[in-house]
Image 1 (tube, one colour):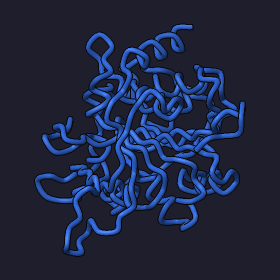
Image 2 (spheres, rainbow, N blue to C red; image 1 turned 45 degrees about the vertical axis):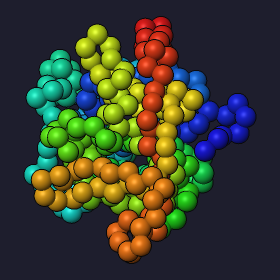
Image 3 (cartoon, one colour; image 1 turned 60 degrees about the vertical axis):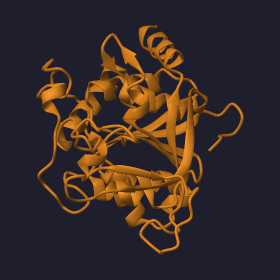
Length: 287
């Protein structure tokens, strides 16, 4: 949703830092087009407690301790505690085993869900959530406040593998696989959702490293960098294809009433200007 002329877009980053999350957070902080009004934390690359610690640490490194951090859910939306945590990618501390000292700051005395709902109510239509991990916090906000889906400006999420193999298994991408039930709630909520899946982020490569999170962040900051299609998205929540994201383009009409019928449309990114994304990432992070 467009902000007033010259006014930076307010964004909340829902994050599980994570090395590529760190890049995306620093990228947002160096982008004059947006104002980061808060970080909310979630499990994914690390458990939620460590995600919160890392978020506080990154804001201290950036000298932006004015930005609040709200701790998110420690379990999936169905109260699942057996979480998939990608410490084998990001190191035991989530930031490449650098063993940073503990941050001085603390998270605010408000849950991520409450913070998301509060900010959407404070600035109706003006807040973009950039969701870089499993979608539990966002789904909880949708469940908690029925007006959240119309108060939130847009939800730009890193997630899904549309018509390509996943990165957890052939069916599923990691963030959707982390909480498929939450993802299905978000996709069918009626909110303005833009999904940036690995079918797009795998096109943005920095000397062998895929820039997943920075690409999703730049899609929120500058939507002209991507193209998208619209349709209904459902998430498979069990079985061998648990975590599968399937886009229904609504071009064919089916006679039967099914779980696909009358679902709201979301946007799914299909192409990205990879050279422009790489150039922006390098320019803003190297300045």
